[in-house]
Amino acid sequence: MPPKIVCVVGPTASGKTKMGVEVAKAFHGEVVSVDSMQIYRGMTIGTAAPTAEEMEGIPHHMIAVADPEENWSVARFTEAADKCVQDILHRGKLPILVGGTGLYLDALVRGSRFAPGSTGGEIRQNLKHRLETEGAEALLRELRTIDPPAAEKLHVRDEKRILRALEVWYETGTTMTEHNRQTQEKPPRYDAVYIGLDFQDREDLRARIDRRVDLMVEAGLLEEVRTLLRAGLPADATAMQAIGYKQFLAVEEGRASVEEAVDEVKLRSRQYAKRQLTWLRRNEAIHWIRWEKVPDFQMALQIATEILTAEGLG
Image 1 (cartoon, rainbow, N blue to C red):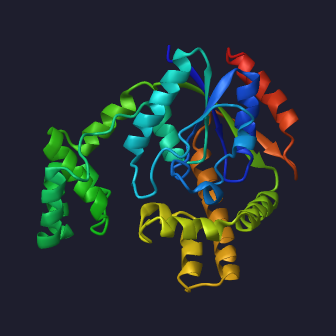
Image 2 (tube, helix red, strand yellow):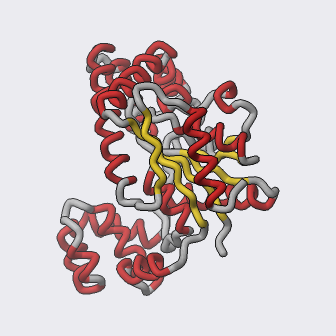
Image 3 (cartoon, rainbow, N blue to C red):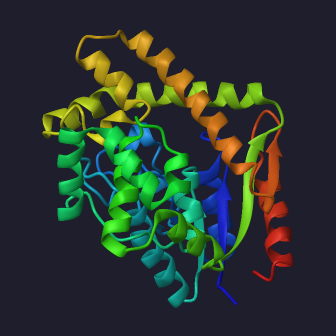
């Protein structure tokens, strides 16, 4: 049987950090952050990474483990996070996965295998050169002869995935379609118990998101962006494209006012929350706890305790 873990999921600003800590305290656990942006050092405010005070003494993993100049793939994240989960299990504690990056969470729970190949490999470099000289249409035609199902799903402008599908074929001799099929057939690496957090009324979630953005600005989000730039982080770095950083980069460069940036961050955060909920609704295994206007973590922990106990934890 795969080892049991707990996943605390939900849209941004739904209380996942606090809930993860409460579950960890009650069930002798440690938290593994599953957030694609909290991995970066020096980006505490804009990513809402938990502070030492918010951690309440509970060990947290996968927070501030990468330089902002780095561009982590889901494969690299999954490999690093899985080592944390295995270490927690080895020490007899319960891993509590907390975060809103659904793709990363699903890959970690499933133990997804990622086909070989990297952006710096010789095959990738050759394919990139061909893309520049021959164009994407030529490479897509080639993919149609190698892996028709994969090519059928791709548009000629989806250059990154065209390159990846060809790279997998030339690296392994296996098509991306076959690789994905084998991955799907593999049993999950972990037996995950999901606790989902949301609000009964969507307006309450929107209000909480807006308040969180206001608090980020008050805490110094603009100064955090300036500090990253002064440290040499390029303005076009992947980390700078995150919600909050991209908008306040525009402020720093004189392309937007603070008021315009705040409004934009709130809008993008609400849109992100909607996408997160759409992703999570596909997972029928989630036990949802839906807040009234104000989250009640004592009540939520009681519900979670009943769920986890029934699942053999505790």
